[in-house]
Length: 273
Image 1 (cartoon, rainbow, N blue to C red):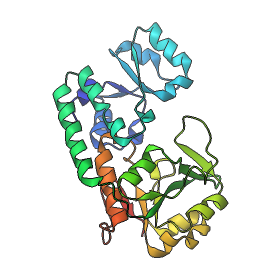
Image 2: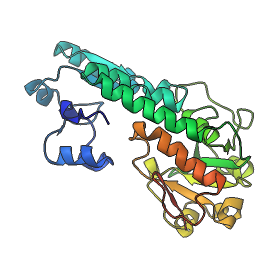
Image 3: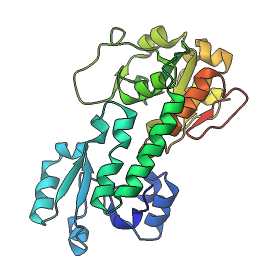
């Protein structure tokens, strides 16, 4: 978004794990080198072309040996803690830090202000009263949901919707994770009457049809949103496109206000038909 992709030389995501076209192309062309998984990067390859700065997410906290090796190589480490921000706009504001680091402060500030204005137009503070469940079904049959108050549930509320689960509904675990697993029975009880279902494609892959959704759990046929045709699925670029928060909220707003009726595709959501 600030024209500084050329500053990135290495990545711990392989080409098939990228859903941002410009990054994917750069990895394919060799402009950005894949250096292995973040838990076990190829330090010999890193040492051949050491970057001026290594940026890792907070997941590096669980791999102290990686931190130690980077220190041995004399590579400074920045831990990107944007995932700990409590609001979508807070996450997006991290672009100012990268603008500062890369000499793109004006571009970063301009982008952030434009996105802030876009959010001001969407987030009127008025609730539609429409309830939304955001989830995916894991391979063992449990349901992964967002914790109440995490940034996805806040995006739903900013868009004028109401996240279906409250803290009282879930026995929320005290940890840094923004999601938690619950049994299908608990999900059925809490989300059966939700106005909208949004399936998270990031881990389990996308679903395009109701039949594909029901293959994951036939119980979903009883859900009000399935019966009314109000089921959507995220595009797989949704969580990599941090700077798209305003457009994501715009998509959610279109869904809960009914503006998306008759549409099969939004920017970050597609209708499950």
